Amino acid sequence: MMKYALFPGCVLEGAAKEAYMATKKVAVALGIELVEIPNWTCCGASHAQGVDELALIAINARNMAIAEGMGLPIMTVCNTCTLELRQAKAKLDSDKNLKAKVNEILAKSGYEYKGTSEITHLLWVLASNPNVFEGKITKPLKGVKVAGYYGCHLLRPPKVMNYEDGKNPESLEKIISILGATPVEFDFKLKCCGFHAFFTAERDVMTVTGEAVDSAAKAGADMMVTPCPLCQMQLDMYQPEGRAAVKSKVEIPVLHLPQLIGLAMGMSKEDMGINRHISAVEKIK
Amino acid sequence: MAITLNIHRTVADKKWVQEYKVELKKGMTILEALNEIKAMQDPTLSFTASCRSSICGACAVRVNGNAELACEVLVEDLVKRYKSETLTVEPLGNFKVLRDLIVDWDPKFDRMKKIKPSLHPKKEFSPEKGCKQSIADFKKYDEYAGCILCGACVSECNKSTVDEKDFLDPFTFVKAAKLVLDSRSRDPKEHLQAVIDAGLWKCMKCQECTANCPKGLKPAEAIEKLHEATFKLGLTSSVGANHAKALYDDIYNTGRLDESKLSIQSEGLVAAALRAPFAMRLMKTGKLDPFEKVPVNPEINKIRDILKNAKEAE
Ligand code: SF4
Ligand code: SF4
Ligand code: FES
Image (tube, rainbow over all chains, first blue to last red; front, top):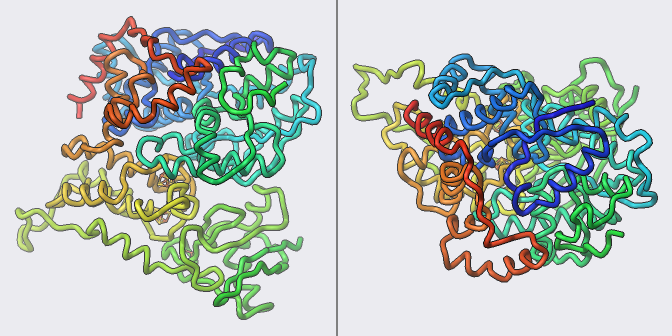
């Protein structure tokens, strides 16, 4: 049985609670055991890093040290959490002086970072282990056209996020096909939803949000799916503003990856918390 | 194997896509393919290149949507990556096109002037005494000196694509990081203020710049270093800085970010109030719960010590 130390990240405890619900239910059903890392903290979300980079490397070294103590690899369900943890790990593992410096800081609080736990993402785990789906897809999503939206931080920077070629990734389409649905190619597949510049460049952010949704709708997608809860929030919650910014007419539902999987495994829309979403919820049957 | 290059052409007001076929040879670069087309098939096709060894930065073009150095990237690698024997070659994105694959750098250099892109040495330096710095200080910006000004980093920049007027090109942020982090500089604050005014906090953090730099520079990280410098040099009065600090403070206070307070912390009370209709929309489906309190991490004292000790260690 596969077993991971789960790093849920802040939004799964807050605005994207439904993603946590769906992740837990789907993991159990697929036979993947998830143990939440006790007392984890925010990864810095790529913003706190801009206040004090060393401090955030140390904060994430603490997160990883706790998982190391559990003897488990770390699984995340958020692109930015994955990037921040892997970025910290890459820096610590490639720079002895930095590692020593950070361990000196951690020692005062009783932790030690060793570098023994790998960090992966739900999408990568599933794409590498398609056998977990065998016999489980009881309600294949036949005829449903799904636009897979990767989100920046699962693909870039490529040296740190190197699961697959970030310029032509295939993992998400692979899962969509396993679920019986049809992956849709669209221009904005690898582009940015704007989430991280929400407070500083709002007008531009709404434009990219709208363009992403519009591009998927124009390509004929019935819905979008994303492995990142931040992208999901941006494309779902701000879809009205986004569509207005680019004058797009079609409203389209945006699912978290585990929600789409749950639907194909016969779980209900309510089980997956899809009614908590804002945009075009009624289009999900 | 013959490969097809669909090249986006521009001559004066005319734009079209022209198809060329080239016999793929082992080790053939995009630049070699372009040279062969120009020599054997179509002398009107225009592009720039000089060093043919990834040094001069003159040959960057966009292939299948991503910027590449034409003299460096192998056609066979691209055929493998995109699983296709047909490739699309365009001029770099976010540049004005002069003709075919040739882009105009003049507006970019004009924009770069906003950051006053030259180093003014500290007063203590003189021709007699020289301009020395420690190896550790040199290493703080050394990497950024490797920029060859090829323009690949801005080609796919998501912020620049929407609006570049209130932003800088990623390579200009790289240059700015060099000027702000160089210990020999007399006026890092002046450079930094100019960068803040020119849009430092508007970066979308999409990492396209870092993904596309053929020299392995990390413009997105340079931007983060500049963010950090605003705190170190005390130039932090902006929404972007407030937002970064709000997240940092959340980690200090509870260990986790507090969504219900974020807008107020970042934008101030009035701006946050203007978001009330949006908040109502979220409350209706249960997305946002203004009364929910983020629990305090049981190990909060240890977490605070980590933040404090890290600050001291710098
Ligand atoms: S990370 Fe920022 S500067 Fe770099 S490409 Fe994205 S928006 Fe542009
Ligand atoms: S930062 Fe990299 S991609 Fe950008 S101009 Fe310099 S060398 Fe080219
Ligand atoms: S020709 Fe000089 S970098 Fe390619």
